[in-house]
Length: 149
Length: 204
Picture (cartoon, rainbow over the protein chains, first blue to last red):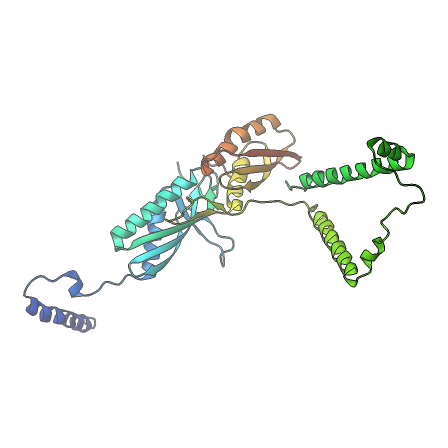
């Protein structure tokens, strides 16, 4: 009961401009006229990190303190930092790669995937993706983890 | 594992040796008197024992004040060159710089990898071989012309031949696959250690 009044208030407040313009236009509105969509730099960084983590052979790192002692983790997202210029972005990715895979082609695939997925999901034009390979993980490296076969 | 200034030393020792040999030959020829015979046979007039060895006005060269400064500068330069040669004797690792794995223009972005990262992957690859206690890898050169130097510590009862064969058959090809280029050189140094490698868990 206590939560109802504010939700009603917001509901009442939000349709007001729509009805005003709706009366003027008298039909369906363009998405741009209804309001603006803002995607923060942090969101783009996280989306790019998730896209990178979903790429086969790419993983992030976790643990450590102040960047010291972190270890490769296949479940972690690679660290991405983005610089936005309008709708254009340049990204820096710090990722681990599975060893032995061809590093050039793997990172090239990651680069293409990030730029195409960011274009699809956010409409951001990715110009440059700088990739720094921070770890190479062999099959035996994850000896700390145990799996039920 | 470390590189020393072998080529530099050989080059300069050869140059100094040739100069010393020429000076020594000239000294012997002059002392034995053969030089005067050779000079007269060529057509030159050998100087008499009473003639001055240097031109008459040779001392005038050192009269101006600048002469002392020039000699001092030349001495300092020679001294610095000698110091540089001495410092070059310090053995160096000469590890490769950051590997650049992108195209030359790098329009789409750069791809970089520290050689230390790659070396640790190679080390864990070597340590997987049965009989190896520990391994230290060092990468030199560049991403297009890499060189691998391995320092492998093995168990005293391990099969050295099989370990070296596995390094050449598995470890080096893995690195070549990762870098997508053949290794220019692979050097393996094998040491025998007493303690046995032991892992707490087996990964299937």
